[in-house]
Length: 161
Image 1 (cartoon, rainbow, N blue to C red):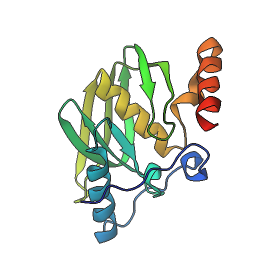
Image 2 (cartoon, rainbow, N blue to C red):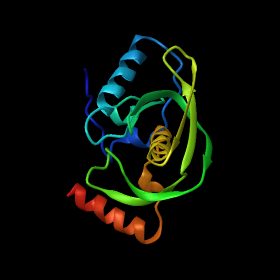
Image 3 (cartoon, helix red, strand yellow):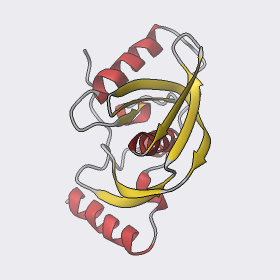
Image 4 (tube, rainbow, N blue to C red):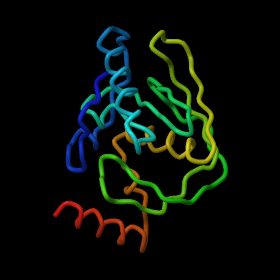
């Protein structure tokens, strides 16, 4: 079991779009195992590969008893709206009210290169969107606006002191 250390806000890998996975080898299998081991830690719902230092497009999730991973994920369907608290392991101690789609469908492949589709509502939908954003080099704080952005950015600066 390998729980990998997290990368935090300010690390350039978090702002760099991940590379599509092209080689399905033992190194990828180890990365997926590490993502799954790392997301099993208490308080974790999802973990993108760049959050543990890999530039490959893969993430794991662990929401409401649903544990899994996706390689080369793409959001293919979004509907509805859900506003609620959102946070990120890479920005500890900070949270914000963020609106996301209430329903999300994300497709990708597994380690055997077989197609996988994950459908989520509520918190799983939020997680799927959040982790896919990570793989594009985006953080949940990037889309905040107005007073919520100002409040959250104050939290970010205070947390970094």
